[in-house]
Structure formats: C-alpha cells, structure tokens
Length: 231
Image (cartoon, rainbow, N blue to C red; front, side):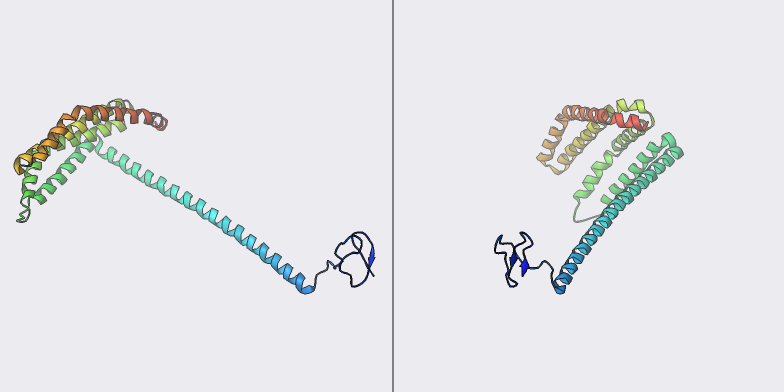
C-alpha cells in the first residue's frame, strides 16, 4: 500500500494518484541519471553566471583603465604644451609674438614665390601672386595685432576686457583686405562677380564688426569664471 503524502490515505501500490485528494503518488526521488543531469545543468548554469560576472568585471576594469590612461595622456599632453608655451614665453618674452609674425611673413612669401614659378598652363597664378604680394605687409600687420592681443590676454588678466574689441578690429581689417584683393582680381580678370562680392563684403564691414564684438564679449563673460579660478 502507498500512503498519500498529502492526506495520508492508503492507496494501491500501482496507483498514480490518491483516490481521496487526487494528489500525485509518484515518488519525488529522481533516478541517478536525472539527478546527475540536473546537477550538471545547475553546475553549467552557475559556471555561465560566474563567467558572465567575470567578463563584466573585466570589461569594467578595461573601461576604467582606458579612461584613466586617456585622462593621463591628455594631462601629459596638456602639461607638455603648457611647458613648451612657458619655455617659449620665458625665452623670447615680449618678442615672441614678433617672431611668430616674422615666421608667418616668411611662409607667406615662400608661398607667393612658389606661385610665381614659371607655368605656361596657368598664367593666372602669376597674377594672383602679384596681387597677394601687394598686401603682404598688411597681412604682416594683422598677424602682429592678433599675436600681441593673444600674448597680452594670457599674460595680463585685466587685458582680457579689451581682447574682444581688438579681435573685432582684426577681423574687420582682414575682411577689408580680402575685399581689396577681390577688387584687384576683378580688374585684372574682368570678372564682374568678383567686384560685386567685394562691394557686398565692404558694405557688410560694420555689421561684421558689431557681430564679432558681441560674440567676443559673450565668450569672454562665459570664460571669466573659469579663468579666475585658474588664476
């Protein structure tokens, strides 16, 4: 006789369900093969979980190390750049911007010389080189204005209040020189569109000045707290 594990009623040995409550009379004890399969499945599940945790942990460590390495490389590059800049300012001082402008002048003159080399296929290049050569000194003066504005803005914190005005003047003068170059090019090549573009650019100079000036002071106001913290 088989006793029902739920209600205790005795049933026949070959009965599968209790005749009173209907509970299953099949033994909960599984065969050795089933137990081994179940244990193997549980073991593989645990191993998979451990492997997944290990992979996740390694991935997090790699990500953290990559971010740390990237941050350290960025800091070293920034430090090297600042060290180079400090060395340059210590070595040349106030003549540093002048040296940069002369380097710009030399490079600009070399470009014009290359453009002026004999070339039968593109004779227009010689005309463009001649036009640019006329304005090489104004470009040199603009380079001086830009370099010394940048130099004094970094060296003297109080000078920053004037830097947007000087940069606006620089940008307007640069646009004016470009308009002059377009005028000269239109006269040499007889292209009316160049003259129209030059006239439009020249008429837009006041608007360009005000826009660049306002943009410069907005950027200055936004950057002042950070610069004061660094100072």
